[in-house]
Image (cartoon, rainbow, N blue to C red; front, side, top):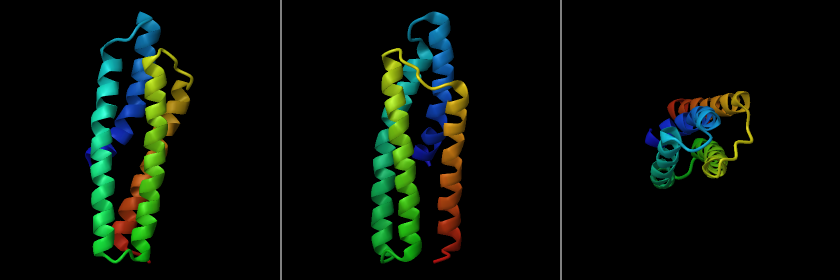
Length: 124
């Protein structure tokens, strides 16, 4: 859940970081906090993926487990894209609009809902 929280929080924090950078013309506390959150939650992501693979092995990698792992992989790609945005932002480069970042932030919600649905219902 810690990794999931950062998947939602970091893109939103990028919006505030971008606004703060435009106002101050330099990095402020929001940028430092966003970078630290991303870096810390990267470790949580590795733990989440590792434990998911162990549990998948425990359940003999049934079809629903593969669907769940595919959705987790999609979230990992989303998280990696977020990381690239964070690294660019550390250099003062903000290419994405506020609207793009808001939509990008909400896309991950669908992945999480899909994961929860597959795990709870085990439809396959």
